[in-house]
Image (cartoon, rainbow, N blue to C red):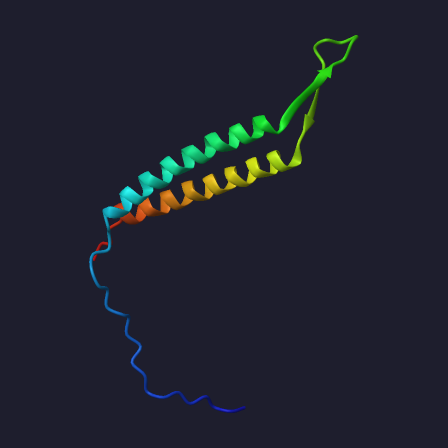
Length: 103
């Protein structure tokens, strides 16, 4: 068994520069929420472009046959996921904007 020898190091926390809360991050959060809303609208529009009504069944008029186009549906899902990521980042930015650390 060998002994681990460490050099004499200074293990101090780094000094913080500036304040902990940054109110300008709230503006970033608002911009991200607006962008996420626009992406949500775009996702709904893309989904609508990807659904084609082929027809109805002759004996059952309440039964409608739809055809889904993969590229439109996939783009809709991707845009919606990007919008959700923006909402999560907006929440993070908002927390960083109002957070304060007690001493």
